[in-house]
Length: 133
Image (cartoon, rainbow, N blue to C red):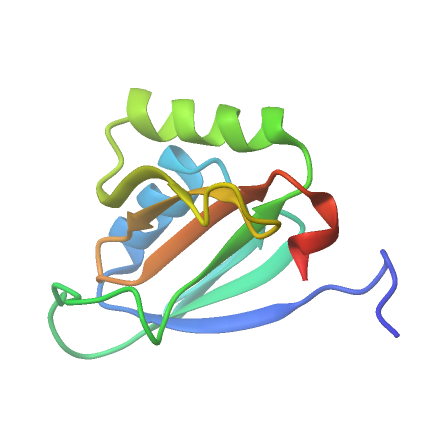
């Protein structure tokens, strides 16, 4: 079973390492752990995201599904602070803040950001903490 000492790892493709570093570190506030000629490794809210340099051009995603990643915050203040940061820093939104499943146990607030490559990042907070999983 995963403990607090374990870290989830996700690798994603990016088309420009400088743009990716600016988005994830300067705008989103992630910590740059390492940088090489072909990738950057980030502390993404306590987990590891590696942005691998990939050939191609940025895409304009048509839908959030099936591919996206992000963080489900347990603390509503952390969720609100990240949203305020995204608004202040004019980070591109794919979906603005919304309330999903209103009135149900699954009720949660969510917003989706788009990185320079077109990767989608969903951030959410559930009203009922039992619904995080």
